Image (cartoon, rainbow, N blue to C red; front, top):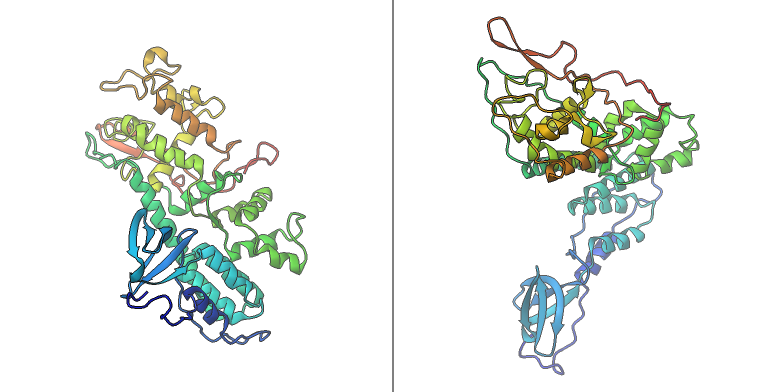
Length: 448
């Protein structure tokens, strides 16, 4: 409002809201309805402001400043706007306009309802708008649906390539953020010989494969199943009753929830496709190992340079360089999975509290597997009520059962000494992390 205008003398104003104007621009572009093969002209719409939560408004002052927040109170003299949790007061005479805002979801629903399914240009522009709003997974889904209906739109195919690349970058950034939450890496020495310890870690692809095997379909992480993977699934298992057989059904299958598609991949035991499923966030069980076990006591008690992380490690070696990276965490997990102590698996998933890994960390007088008497060794746990012990048991109970066999060739490394007292790394040739034949099913095909 202008402070010199009275309510009676002020002329009426007619303004379209920013939201309505942007929607009109978006829905007014020329269409290419029914023109299969004709490429849509590039179209752009000015992005309207979007509410970050319900009930927000845009307040514009007479000097042109704009503020976004939720109106908490107003009277004839002032307006109270909550901005980022802080109440901010504005005099009525200084307010030019208040525009109610919609959330992204509300605006998206309205725009999509207003577009004819055969209007390729407007559908492409909707995808571009979603992409600019950084809703990458939704943008990928809309683009795949658009290409499914009209595969000749090169702009959509190129934008889908860009979106998928940004999704992968986002995954790496989230991975790095998760790594920063863990303890800093344990510094590793070279031991008495000066010889290096093992350095071969699992690759990013193998880390992703382990995540796929540990997914709980009832509480899944974020997933990305690419169109090419779905095409392989439909082609290689065309006769399966689990998959659609009609052209219409196959077309609709591309739009299914990635979790449902993964469920079919698991049910068909299409293990060649497991690695193609991109796990965009960590399964809960593996996240518990990364945050509650690996940095909390495994690195500090077992994987130090003077113990199982150095040249004195013997037959049980754990990596401790860059200890908070996924490659190190998952390599150590695989070592635990495939190591034994006195013939017993290091991890007893049937009775986690009886696992040698845990028992070796208890004081000798209350352990089924007392730790050997080694100078400088101290128990990792006070007793079985120690929170580090109970959280490790909780992690083991959260892992997928029955336990899968990861198709990764890997033999836990050993540190031995030659006749001259020099440390020698043993990791049999051909058994370093890599691909591998799929494991045999020993339980009637129930294993993943």
